[in-house]
Amino acid sequence: MKIDAFTQLYGIIGHPVKHSLSPLIQNLAFTHLGINAVYLAFDVTDLPSALAGVRALGIKGLSVTIPHKINIIPFLDNIDEMAQKIGAVNTVVNQDGHLLGFNTDWTGAILALKEKGEIKGKRYVILGAGGAARAVAFGLKQEGAEVTIVNRTYEKGKALAKELNAEASPWDNLPEIKAYGLINTTPIGMWPEIRHTPVDEKVVTNFALVMDTIYRPLETKLLHLAKKAGCICVNGLNMLIYQGAAQFTLWTGKKAPVEKMLKAAEGVLVNNG
Ligand code: NAP
Image (cartoon, rainbow, N blue to C red; front, side, top):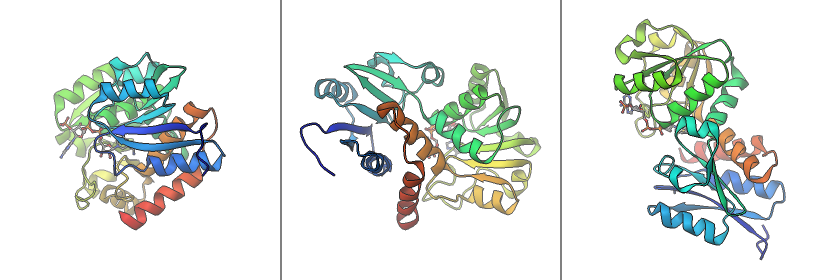
């Protein structure tokens, strides 16, 4: 890769950030398309100073991850409509000094689901009511699905369901709920707790499609049970790659090499967990 006085800088801000797959996939995309740019990981705790630096140095774009997705909003010049609804920004575009905020988590989830299953007119049960749940739920509603939110803290699930004009159900009622899709947005089953699953094999059979937003491991216990039950399975890596591809397009106006990005990330996850 040639770095010279014209090289443009992009990056991810978060804390922690060293585990991120984004530098790998975004640099691969820049190189593949011959774009003179680099993408770095910045471990940021002082968000206002970091954003002043972005403006001052002319950093062209950012991915934003935990814990800054919500706190960044007041520092930006414009927020797109879906990011406003979701209440979180995961992408910043620096347009001639104006910082524009977007959310591509919902795009990533919807593209991953569309690849394998159906959305319009189908009911999805979403486990969780945090940031990932909000992105997935607003995306599903936008695409014409029905949504039921099932969250450990029922009141929080009810509040999200109200915003969405959707249903909420207490966690204990899960065995009685039947729907087209089940999406786990809780961290249950994430490495190193890989023997855990949010629902058992009996509950899994109430759904035709099961998606886990977790991508470490690639096949969570939930997806293992879903595969055994013959469900359509969608893992969290596709969501991650598609949200990254959507970021790349927002920054460059170009289509990202999705297959190559997916293969590279899979290689890292298979080898290092
Ligand atoms: P978050 O905002 O902290 O929300 C976590 C949600 O999970 C909350 O609703 C919480 O319920 C629930 N929860 C946590 N521990 C639980 C437990 N032991 N039992 C039942 N419910 C539990 O986190 P987030 O940002 O939404 O991230 C959640 C997951 O999404 C992470 O595992 C991450 O891997 C995944 N994710 C994936 C992608 C991707 O591209 N694939 C993108 C974003 C996030 P309470 O309300 O009761 O606390």
